[in-house]
Image (tube, rainbow, N blue to C red; front, side, top):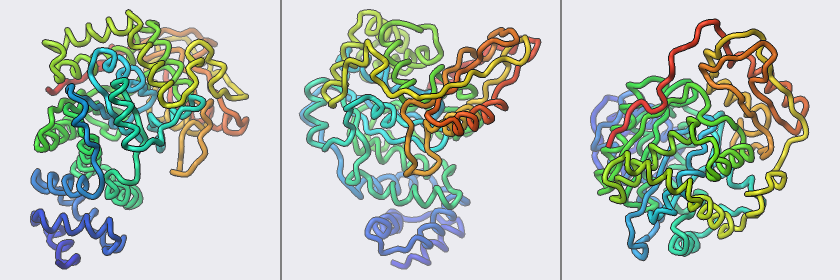
Length: 435
């Protein structure tokens, strides 16, 4: 085949065949197609889109570029969850042990954070001793033993995604829905779970800024997953303000543990966990409907079973379980600075993206993939949109190991907050559930 002819065909908005797409992906992995031609292909796909068949073809080709997990020894219906990224989205650390404690195996491959979107792996690595760099065989053994394992992405699983994503990141093609879908679904199918739940974020702190694009992505994720024989569902959730109150790796671990202990069960973070858990248990045939599934999550938390499973999970992957009762064992930052309300009124804006970027300035996130992470850095927010505050009240506390980074984060945070005399309308956390 001829790479240039394939690029021209896509440039002219002519659908590509399965063999043509497989040729492109094979050339990417084997380095027989140079980056400049792959970039041209990605831009053509970004401008003209990929139809459903093309999206399936590229997803399947990416999947076949590496290993897949063989989970035949785990008899129960297995679940996986993917979030499209957000700020203070700590649902995985709460949802996974809760669902696993109810008899649903959770085998999850997660990534590191980049930019204002935090990564589950970074949060777990803030726990002293915790290991996410585990082999596929070890992951399967752990899943059989405890029903839960969260591992880092390995070079052997969907290697094509790493190559294409690095090019998308520097060619302005990240936002393409078909390319997003192929990246996400290929990795989810590679872990071989039976049920996949997608948490698609919508709002200022998400890649999908409006409901129409979020719904389009959700529907495409579900349809392509079903083509691989998987049961899939999507929750579209708001990311106009941070989901949790703690932003930053060890800070988010603390918030997750507090909820697993039965605290803050009226928070947005836990309310979303309830919905995600309800949908997961329903799709895994553990609950008769979503509401009863959410109630099962409540029981797992209130009984302490979810916390016990989280402790078992930390222990089996080498982490120090003493952190459950002693948060001082987690990384902490040397400096802190309080952000005070400059007037009396109602919080009308807590812009998620700006706050996420402020957390990056503290050192809690990465601007570049190889940036050092300050695991103790971040922000704790004391107020939510709609809360009434008085002038001088503490809206947030910012933490960093660098005074310079602390000041930079504070200056970034200023534009994230607005206070008005009139109380804003209540925001909807769960915008839609597509099952």
